[in-house]
Length: 89
Image (cartoon, rainbow, N blue to C red; front, side, top):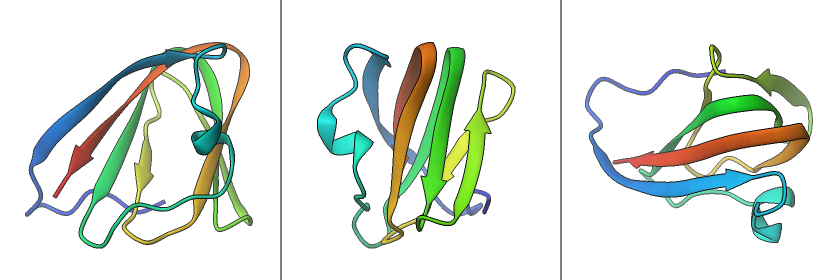
């Protein structure tokens, strides 16, 4: 998984989601716009983060997920979870 570039800055944080409130669009393949990075932060539980349908990471409070611009990805809750997404550009 890539790291956030040093030259990006946070500009928006999405409210926290639970396993019951994850928007359906996050559960299916989607991507961010060009030059838009995301940081998935887990507050509680675990989240399966799949990148390009072949790279899988299990995110937890001590392991964040990095969303690269224009790269297809989706998430899947693994039981009870609380997570948020912060966007950088």
